[in-house]
Amino acid sequence: MRDYLILKLQGPMQSWGEHTFEGKRPSGNFPTRSALLGLLGACLGIRRNEAGRLQQLADSVAFAVRKEERFRIRHDGRKTSLPIIKATDYHTVRDAREDYFGLKSHETIQTWREYLFDATYTVAVWNTDVATISLVELEQAVKSPHFTPYLGRRSCPLSRPLFEMSFSAANACDALRMIPSDGGVIYSEEPGETRTIRLRDVPLVRQPRQFASRNVHVYGGVDVSE
Figure 1 (cartoon, rainbow, N blue to C red):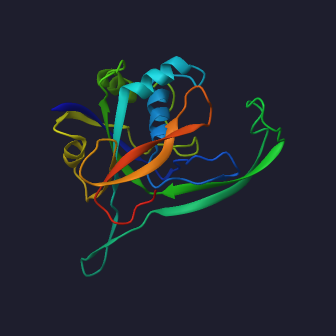
Figure 2: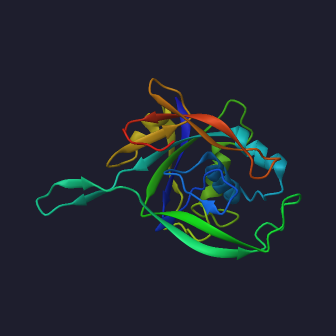
C-alpha cells in the first residue's frame, strides 16, 4: 500500500500549456507534469528563481490524472458524453520576453491562447523513493496555499478547494477509483499493462521553458491526445 494525496482541479476555464515558445499556446487535454509542479510549487511558496527547491519538488512527486467524463441527460433519460470544449483567445502582449536574456527582443507579440471550458480533473499525487517533500507537507500547502493557485493561467481561477482526500491504496488507479466519478481516462506515471504515450512536459529547472520527455501510461478510453 502507498499513501496518496487526491486533488480536484475544477473551474470555468483551464489551460494546460504544451511545449511551445511561439505566439500559439495550445492547451493539452489534461494537466501537464510541468503545470502540476507549478501548482504545488505555488502552494508551497516556491518562487520561480528557486531552482534548488523546484528540483526538490520535481524529484519528490509522481502523478496520475483522471479526466472526468461529462454527460448531458437527454429527455428520454439517456446520457450523451460531452467532448472537451476548447476556445482560442487572441490578443497582443507588450514586453512579453524582456526577462529572457539572449533572445530576440520583441516589444509586442501576438498570441493565440487555448482554453478548456467546464473541465474537471482528479489528480493522485504520491511520493517517489527519493522524496524530500512529504505528502503531509503538500497536503498542508494545498489546504493553505502560500501563493494563489490557478488552473494553468492566472485567468483561470479555481471554483473549489484543491484538496479532496488523502488515503492509502494499492496503486494510483485504485486511489482514483475510490473517488466518486462518472468515469474517465487515467493518465498515469505508474507503469502497467496498458498503452503508453510520450509527452514532452518535464520542466528542466535550470533551463527556463525547456522540457524533457516522459512516458505516460493510459488506462481506458480510445481517443486520447499525445
